[in-house]
Every structure is written in C-alpha cells, then in structure tokens.
Length: 89
Image 1 (cartoon, rainbow, N blue to C red):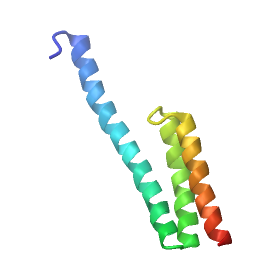
Image 2 (spheres, rainbow, N blue to C red; image 1 turned 90 degrees about the vertical axis):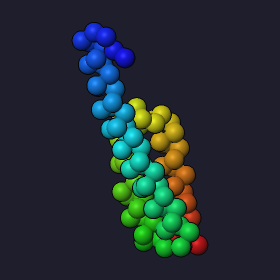
Image 3 (tube, rainbow, N blue to C red; image 1 turned 60 degrees about the horizontal axis):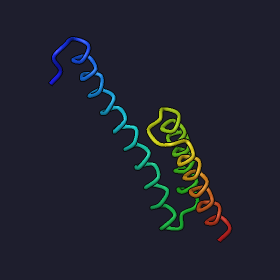
Image 4 (cartoon, helix red, strand yellow; image 1 turned 180 degrees about the vertical axis):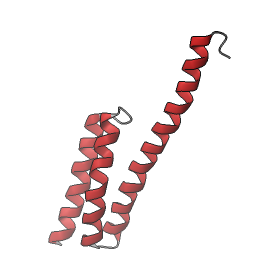
C-alpha cells in the first residue's frame, strides 16, 4: 500500500486510468464485433455503417496509447477489406 501522499495520488490516478482504458478497449471490441456480425450475415449496409463507426474508435484508442498505432491501422485495413469484399460479392 502507498505510504506517502504522492504515492497515494498515483494509486488513485492508476485506478481511474485503468477504468478509462478498459472502457475504451471495450468500445473497440464492441465496434469490431458488430462489423464481424454484419459480415457473417452478408449485410453490406450494416457492415459499412459499423465500419464507419468503428474507425474513429480504433483511431482514438491508438492515439491514447491503449493499442499500438500500427495494430489499429492493420485492423482498420483488414476490416475495410472485408467490407469491401462483401460489396463486390
């Protein structure tokens, strides 16, 4: 347990930051899951809309350092490729 004032503050900040990061990561997972479900149903319109909403979530998570920037870019690229493939199928 923290024994001096600055360590106690850092512990409090850590709890808040962890909760915030967990919520952001959860939003990313939910957004990508919605795309996966729409692609599985072969519903281009729903998949495209879900992708449009997921991209800012991924970018935000990357900019905040919750996920690496390159992982976010790779994920966006792969998801958009799957949606694009659905359009031409």
